[in-house]
Image (cartoon, rainbow, N blue to C red; front, side, top):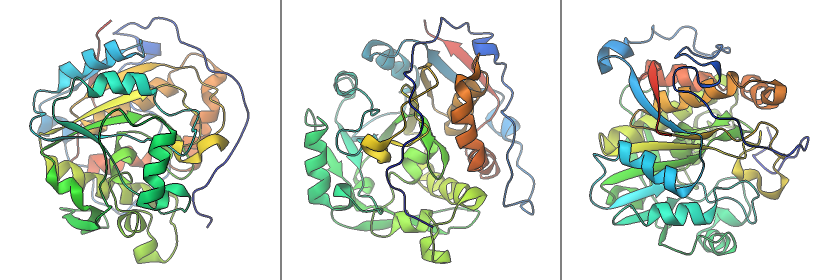
Length: 341
């Protein structure tokens, strides 16, 4: 299949949603979106995540997308963030129109002591496939207000995947081992291969080295081609588990549901114009709960402007990300959504 590259679809401007309530956020309870097909029907049944985690996970929410509320949400989930801290952010292709606002990220990063934005080189070609080109792109996109560590600039190291669905280890940028904690700051949106890109995608692909790890996660190493569908979602879950296990309690997650194109920020200027309006920011210490809540917010959006993003998610079997994380014991699909507004 073709490698991930720039794509374009219909163009309609996004707009802000109306105020949302805690108990009925866009019609949501804490149910799960409709399941898509899975390539692992023969996998053992999912563990009892709810029992293992002691009930519902907490997911904090604000409809306001700005630095003030981003910081406010972070303070709800940063209790275990200590020491040298990696902020995993998708910094985007040159002039990408949908990447997170630099001023918002700058204000946020300034509130995280001893923090560095981290990225890894890509495997699909273009300027970000080399460290030098990647550094140039960072300057173009305005990521020059704090250190940015290209974590695979000096190669990679294997992180074990304990009890993985497919992978036994994944090659991550070697610098990642130098950090004590990680803040996963994610632009939630669609994705050409994953259906959607949430916290899982941000670390599973984003921390894997461009030379080796991303080929493992995309299936190239074992299958000789870039795999798609449920298998790809399972490989992402394996990689994400390795990252989460490495940091243990010292990892937390923020999903910014803004300018949600059906395309990832890796599509650069060719990304489709977002159709679904901006929704808000979510925060949790539970990677599965925050991605599940983000998906539920999309599925329960009040009108048909959600349909393009849902079509992208389902056509790629993107919901398999959630059940794969559940099978790996990575978190809880049952959550309580708590507004900070």
